[in-house]
Length: 426
Image (cartoon, rainbow, N blue to C red; front, side, top):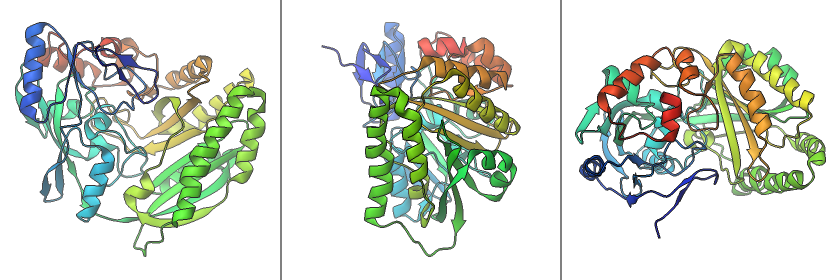
């Protein structure tokens, strides 16, 4: 019986013709040549944290477990195998007194999966993971192994969706390890909307969560600190990050799933329980979070100046339709990126992420929010649910035509294609 690949959320699955676990670029190249000879397609998956079908294939599916580890380090750079999980990279860098300047809040992803789908985090001055990449090693459709550190291939392949080749190694720019001072406090949504410019200008990293059916947000600001470190104790860490944000929150989601009418009350109770806290810790420990409650997610990047309008319209849409939404809406910001298919390409960007408890999907909610975001020239996260196609995406990415032309040149027979790429790239 052939193995089935399923993503983390359980909403995407595929039964490939063959599964391989290459341990080198040469073995990846052999898999690519074999797929071409058989008339099959080939893709490398990560750890399945994308909600879309971006990684799926009915041909040869490459698993990343054997293609891991730090390969080279020095001169402000670290080269790692493409299948290395971000949590392993963080730990290895910290052991050597080094760190990434910015990252997202999930660390189970592989480095290749994270950059190929545009994982971004939040930052005033430093962009997402793709903006910290200085070199890529990849296998092209002809089976050749190439490296790129500048030029069109580099700018296209950093957020390449796996459409241009299979990444086998990634070199990141790193810096001496540093501390972040994290301040968490409840704020009214109305206050945040009126002070967005100040909040984004005054803090290196801003992240806030709005609880629907309330006027309450949990605002998180992270800024570099000379120390000393003042990490939360073991019990405080467990209470906030394991029990409150996962165990208890999961229980509330389950109750809301059974009794939707109770959700506004449950959210009000959650809002009243929020409290201010401050701690200083190693950067990657502040950037990252534990997420065990399964959900579906849609996220759009809009021009930074349209964030207030997007949030107000989303709030009004929820109230107008009387939807019952348990999960907070998360908001983050990034500076412009020069990667062609980065959701922040060429503009200061704000991200609005909407989540739904996995057992109780609400397609109408995502559809309604998506209408708002696309009207505001929004760009969907490549790894999160959306319904946009090449016709729309070509209007919001200035280098979209250049990307598809390069794809035509490098993979004319669509060895790396799948149904998702057929939709979003044409």
